[in-house]
Length: 302
Image (cartoon, rainbow, N blue to C red; front, side):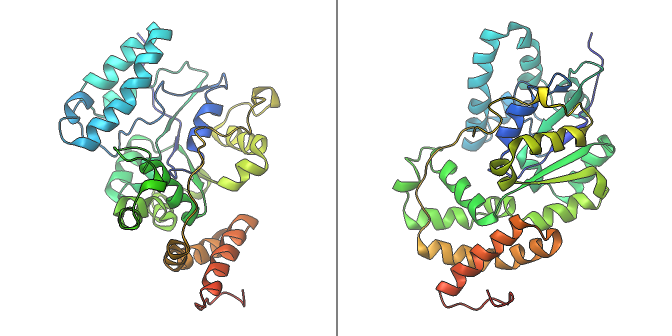
């Protein structure tokens, strides 16, 4: 029987900031073990078995199907995973259930990549810390305006919609004002909550633009951070390829101005916090949008 384990690292998001790319590349490393399903969603969901949880509503049923479809395909190719999926879908969820999901060998570092963890409340993160006090935390950031628009494109390609191009302005505005969508872009709150439990050296922030500019260096940085061999032989030749990339409609001027006004203060604070070329470009972009709309910005004459 495989002894119980715990994840050595978590990737907590942000959604639409490269987490699927990270999952694909990390699982190629022989010293890393990741679950057959990318997103476990343990700390942000109820303890009910997932099959029963699907009875609660449409979004829960949709999430179950999103898990089941690839699970069925995987079990056909890898029958040895059947027991893992039975535990995942049918058992009552709790700390012991969570630990049983991580079946890494002694020499492997296990991880949980679930972007929804960026939305966890302080009590929920306390639970994470009590269970995983020594975990390494990876947080991937993307320009919050680009991130929420990308999430909108994903949302309107699912849940019975026909795509972002077909959505009305009212529907898009409702989505952009949705608490959950906004929370995914609230990096400052996430860093504050997780920083109350995990030391600075336990948190690795990665910027989405880094992946486009130097994907191999990003993977090396994460290998080193989580404690596995960072040698180039463990980096895939296709490391720079995008995963689940889809074209979508450009943002209208009206929405661009509204989001610029909303996210300017946070982007300014993020730039003051990180002071790098990525946050600088975010700030220049949002400042330019506001200036073109003849709206004032307090940032140094941009």
